[in-house]
Length: 349
Ligand code: IPM
Ligand code: MN
Image 1 (tube, rainbow, N blue to C red):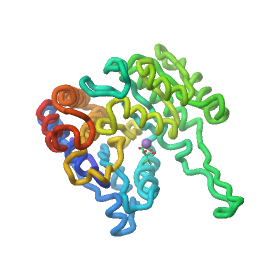
Image 2: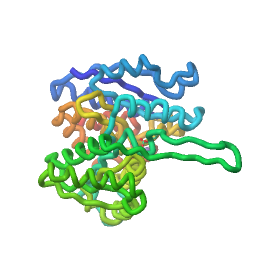
Image 3: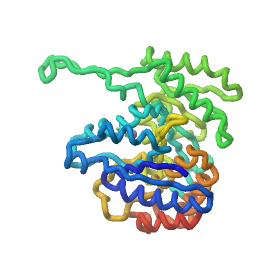
Image 4: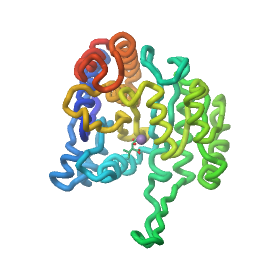
């Protein structure tokens, strides 16, 4: 029995989690486990109604679950930053979800904008540090609003934070599904403090993980190679902001936000799984959003919980639906409604 907190959030979040949960529930009997869900009303509507973004008591309750299943965050009537920082980033920080795991995998039958590249070429994961870097919120203004204004935004990199993220990535390389190559994505030629620490830690830890090949690339070069030679990558580890940026690029080469999922993970603690895309306000309530990202987030959640067989079955069913049914992964162009896509995956388990 797994206790799952569900946060549908904003916009199309609800439509997405409904299908994700449909597939998770369909797994229960086949794979002999149970999920018990509790819904949490958090997001833009709640904020506008009550002024609350993430009450302390809710945060405490969330700690008692096995996992959190999140829809999407972001409301057109709420100033940018309030929900993103107050809810999504707050959950990542307060629950100390120090890894953001983002697979970039092209399923058969899915079209990629990369010419001459197929499923064999696009299959890697990004391990993004999720609690530090530029996201830590360090910095401030001086003489704000004047001609002499100064804005400082600092990247915080602790040996502890970097090391635990690297360890996770090294260990992930040993997964039977991986090819045992770890690429550190940095900018050692310019960010000579932050990435000096990362690079030293990377090579100091490396020998503990015999059999894992170590590789390094600057973030700008990674952007070129993700497009030109994505097959070079197996596992990429990087800091928070670079991870944010390269995983949007990754989402595009795997077929778009319709299928990109991620996990915010602290091994052994309540972790949170979500589609990478946003709340897509313009599609809300129309039943046209692609739920595969949420369904894949559900698969990642099961994998995290140890239900690897069920997770694999969801992935296979998703692959089947992609190759045999969907016209496109884009919202409104799938040839099926949001709910129909969920039904097809559930039926294909
Ligand atoms: C993501 C998102 C968030 C981030 C935003 C919404 C704060 O872009 O999950 O990648 O920057 O991490
Ligand atoms: Mn992002």
